[in-house]
Length: 100
Image 1 (tube, helix red, strand yellow):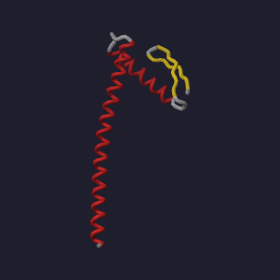
Image 2: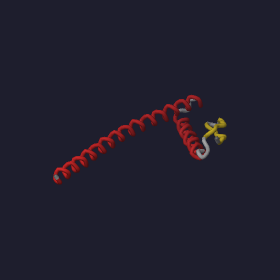
Image 3: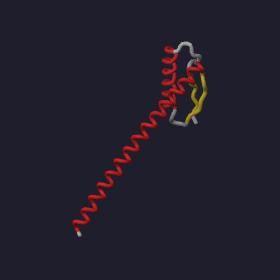
C-alpha cells in the first residue's frame, strides 16, 4: 500500500491506496477540491462539513445515473446481440435446408 498526504478544503489527511493508483487518487482529490470550491462560491452559508455531505450526495447521484444509463445500454446491446444471433441461426438453418 502507498501512503499519501492530501488536502481537501484546507484539511490535511493521510490516506492509503493501492500501489500504482496514487496519480489517479491525486487526480480525484483535485476534482473533489474543485467541485467543493465551486459549491462554496454558490452556497457561501454552508459549513465545510455540509459542503462535503452535499458533494457526496451529488457524486452518488451522478454514479447512480451513470449506472442506470449503463444498464439500459447493456440491455439494448444484449437485445441486439440476440437479434443478430437469431438472424445468423436462421440463415444457417436455411443454408442447411438448401443443401438437403
